[in-house]
Length: 206
Image 1 (cartoon, rainbow, N blue to C red):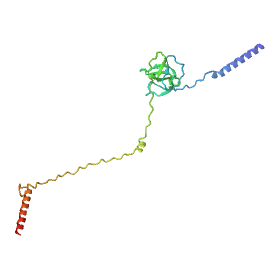
Image 2 (cartoon, rainbow, N blue to C red):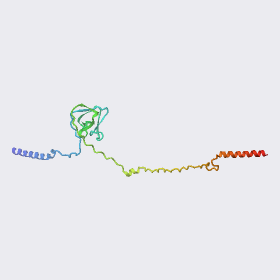
Image 3 (cartoon, helix red, strand yellow):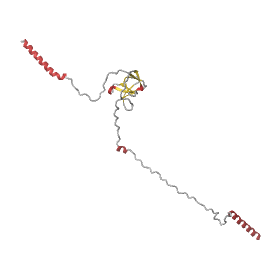
Image 4 (spheres, helix red, strand yellow):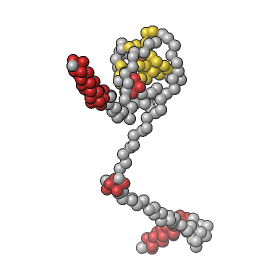
C-alpha cells in the first residue's frame, strides 16, 4: 500500500515538474529587442601609447578631422590636459587623439599646440570624409525685389559748342587816301599854315 502511494506521489511530482517546466519556458527565453540602426558612440578602454599634453596658454579646439576649415569643432582641451595619441595626419601637422564621448571616440588637434609627454610610434592615419555642407537658405526673389529701390537713370549733360569767334577785319585807310603816299599830318600842317597866312593878310589889310 505504501509502495503504491509512493509511486502516486512520484507521478504527481513528475507531472507538476513537467507543467512548471512548460510554463516557465517563455520566462527563461531571453527577449530580443530591436537594435538601433543609428551610430552610437561606444566607450572603449583607455588607449596605450604616446601621450600628448596641451602646452598652449589657452584652450584649444578638438575637431572631427585634420583641418580647421573642413571639419567642425567637437570639443575643447585646456592647458596642461593630457590625452593618448593614436595617429598623425599625412602632413604631420595634426594628431589624432583618444577623445571619449564623440562618435568613434577620436578627435584631431593641431600639432604645434601640444607636446609629447611620452614618445612612441604614431602611424599615419588617412583623414575622415568631410561632412556634408549645410544648405544655405535662399531668399525669395519676389520678396527681395520688394526691398530693392529702383535707381532713376540720370541724363548726362549735353555739350553745346560755343559760337564761332568772328574776328573783325579793318581796312588800311592809308591805302585808300586820295593824297597817295603824302602823310596825313603833313596835309594838316600845310592847311594850318595856309590858314595862318590868310589870317595875317586880313589883319594887315585892316
